[in-house]
Image (tube, rainbow, N blue to C red):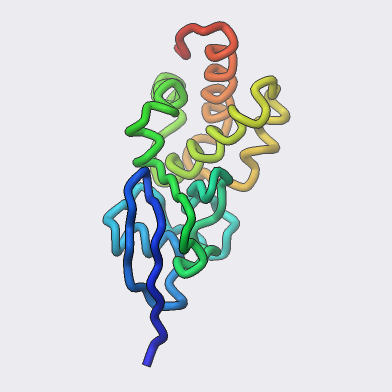
Length: 163
């Protein structure tokens, strides 16, 4: 018989209590139990970044984090940061720069870029590229993504538009 555990956490500002299998990873919990399908399952080894979410204010790989580990934690997904408007300018820049082609990597890319915008608002192209190096994209060639993040950084500095 599979072991289960009860977890209580806050997901996108809402209290959640669920019984979960002890070995269920966080991204599968979010997708299957809470129907938050923005975070994707890609490599399941923590290298592609498609499953990136924020756990207690820090980005983590949802495929490497067990749901049982988030008891008492606060989790934010792409759905949560979109609803609050936190990444509206970044998402606008992704659209304007065609940085979201197939969209599979986009939620993880946006979550990672949002962290960069917070921790290094003076990042240059090389620093943006380095910070996002843990997120894979097969469609864009990365230049459009770097452009979108750079545009958002500049827009935030100038208090203006990202386009």
